[in-house]
Image (cartoon, rainbow, N blue to C red; front, side):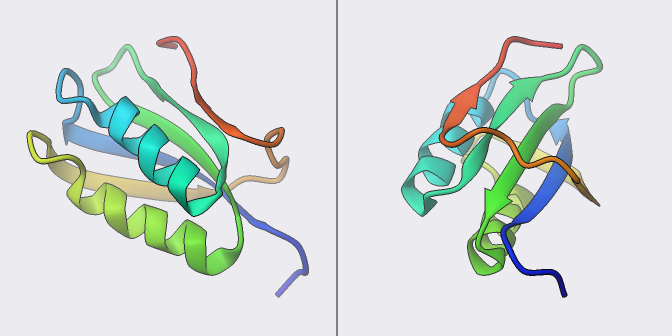
Length: 95
């Protein structure tokens, strides 16, 4: 396994927009000290990039499988990301 942070792109589908998923993700990722971003997608999914220590990134992915209380997550697709994001975590505009 390579040294350095684990970096993944995550796509969450289900009832995940209009349920505070982005704000919830931002709060949890910031609390874990993970770098990256989250945004709504035009197709109704939520997309995020998480970068940081593997255990914290894996924990964040596990949290996304449940989501905030009003969400109904049907799938979480995770793919490796080559380019880590800049430091910090933020919400991006819908894209």
